[in-house]
Length: 115
Image 1 (cartoon, rainbow, N blue to C red):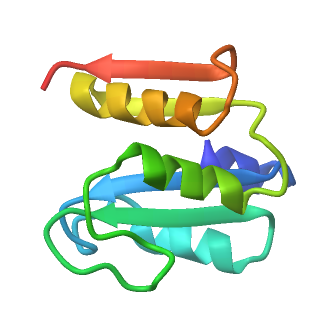
Image 2 (cartoon, rainbow, N blue to C red; image 1 turned 135 degrees about the vertical axis):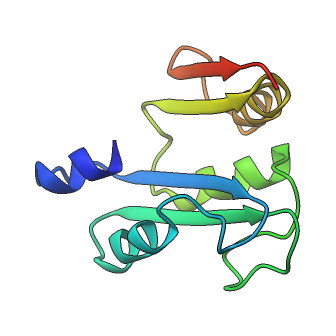
């Protein structure tokens, strides 16, 4: 979705919170950082579970409701769509965090896999 956004010239404000064990293990991490640095309305943050997070805009823990609220607050307006993909437990925490952050349930879309 992020690649499509960039290729199509979309300027929709977008926030991405991605969880990984380490920065090196982050899927497309360098590409996401470059997208954020392009100042195109794309915000990226990592939740690292096995090493300290740098920069300060990242997190050093598993995703929780407070983290989701923090990411939502970085956007200038409430998100019109929220996509959550991951294991059942991960999706539950992230989707519940979005609800706790005051995001309406209707735009929250989830994709789950067993783990």
